[in-house]
Amino acid sequence: MGEYPQIFRVRQTFEAPRVLDVAAEVERQLARLELQRQLQPGQSVAVTAGSRGIANIALIIRAICQHVRRLGGEPFIVPAMGSHGGGTAEGQRKVIESYGVTEQFCGCPIRSSLETVIVCQAAEGFPVHFDRQAWEADHVIVCGRVKPHTGFVGDIESGLMKMMLIGLGKHEGAKIYHRAILNYSFGQILRSVAREVLAKCRILAGVAIVENGYDQTALIEAVPPDQFETREKELLLLARQWMPKLPFAEVDLLLIDEIGKNISGSGMDTNVVGRKYNDHKAADDEYPKVKRIAIRGLTADTHGNATGLGMAEFCRSQILQQMDVEATRINALTGGHPTAAMLPLDYPTDRQILDAALPTIGLADPPDARLLWIHNTLDVAEVECSLAYLEEARRRSDLEVVVPPRPLPMDTAGNLPAFRSAH
Image 1 (cartoon, helix red, strand yellow):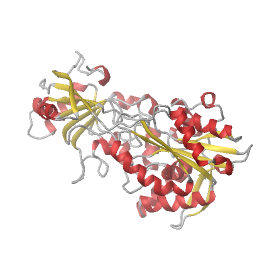
Image 2: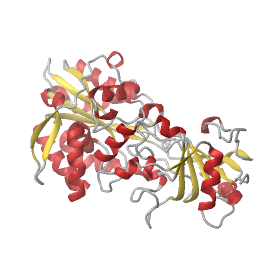
Image 3: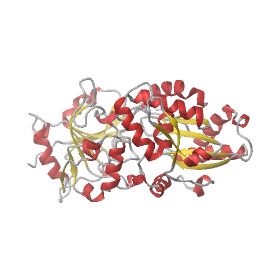
Image 4: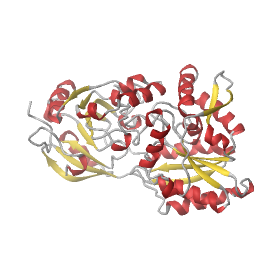
């Protein structure tokens, strides 16, 4: 084909509250709860560490552990995730260590196991699983990021409540809960299981994290267990308000440099790309509306888990070599989303992807295509945009053109550079 859109780079302005001293804020928040009224010296405390690449997560986990130690408790860290890390104890330990959550940094042991205890039967008739290491501890502190879920809708989505289900339920719990959600609803199963866990599993406190549109820590709040549900609803509203988004509502082709489990549970955040309800098309009232998605690579921290690749129409062939097929399939099946592991059309070069994708977008000629190019769905503060958007970009006060229009910077092999070095 040879004719492609020219591109320019915009910088978005998001609302950006930010916690400047993360460790001090964790300490201040936990001190408010006066946990010494329940935590006796010498008692053990399991602290959850999940599979997401949360900003400052190692600092936050370490600060929680230090607070527990100051009160005379004995903290240890539990990897809290369903089927990530290939569904193995060692794999899950490696996931949190890759984020800097190590025994050396946090000053306490990591106890990783897939073994669970069946706490009781939920009212809907399925077993409630809970991580054995956490079950045997005297107390549990649940730490997690509150944000819109990539597949479920409700007044509570991803956060402390979900961590008690899927994270502390481990692989066995995640499997049965995702099955139950297909029969009932996410909200019903979330509340049903959380109710049992809060009643029976010695949850001492929660530490909720909310991020801003620049992938920075915007808020940290220690929450007593009896307020998890009410407070998480309020924090979710803030998370929705602050979360990153693409700068334009209609997109013909979206190029994404990388997807991965550290970026989102679905590899790429469906809230950002507009595919929360359907893999390949936005719902009627859902935005943005993206016709085609092309994925260029996997993050290192995803360890070959390419869950979410099935929501793209095109990808670079190198991804199929990077992909751990078994880990990807286990994760997609556990989550009740088998199509997330299906393979898009793959091509060796970016040029071949463009040549295949651009004729499928409708009547617009390739140079006039509405093309966006991003690093990943957590990092959209700067976006490369095609000329079709230039007039609107210049009009909008929340967008600044930081690199003027230029040809796509394709090399002689037909590949684009990494997004971050494209300017």
